[in-house]
Amino acid sequence: MNFKFDQKKISLGLELPLMEAFYTIQGEGFHKGSAAYFIRIGGCDVGCHWCDVKESWNPLIHPTTEISKISSDAKQKSDIIVITGGEPLIYNMGPLTNLLINNKMKTHLETSGAYPLSGKWNWICLSPKKNKLPLEGIYSKANELKIIVFNLDDLKFAEDQSMKVNKNCLLYLQPEWSKRDKIMPIIVDYAMKNPKWRVSLQTHKYLNIP
Image 1 (cartoon, rainbow, N blue to C red):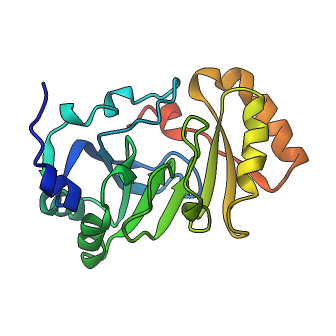
Image 2 (cartoon, rainbow, N blue to C red):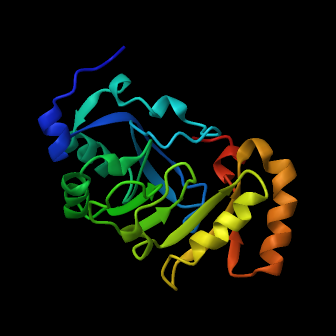
Image 3 (cartoon, rainbow, N blue to C red):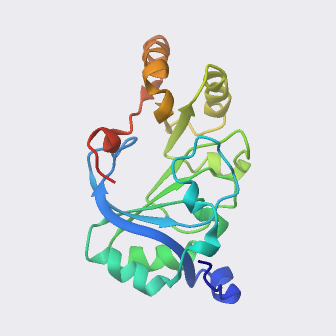
């Protein structure tokens, strides 16, 4: 089923294609273990072959939702709001993050960085993808850099990307889920030899929660 877009409201960031929203435990990166409310926005053209939410790619199959509703639903759940996708920065995130911040919520972004940064953020997790590299402007804003490791070449990519972020940015290597048994020992060994890197796990999958 395809939903009708109000292109003007979408472009202004007043409505967004909402794939899902749910309250759970953050499973990855610096904030792992913290309760958080996730808002997953539909739409992505980065095209990672190992993506585990490919149903998020087509924005037309997700209902456009007014940001006032998205914000009011979030307020009832948690003070940490994680906006993810898809790729949220395809859209203007300013209006939604203004609402969330005005309601005393902390805004966390998960992005590939492939689109211009918009919105106000308390935390930015930058997860670059080779298919469509981040725009230069986001590197200095990232609080954490998360590289998904699918093969050995991704470790070189990780080092290249780490040279672009600010000196306070936390660095994470995370095994791609389907390759975790093979990749995990490699990441552990690499982090021990290169202690600027931390190991990130998708702990929510081990806990069998969203």
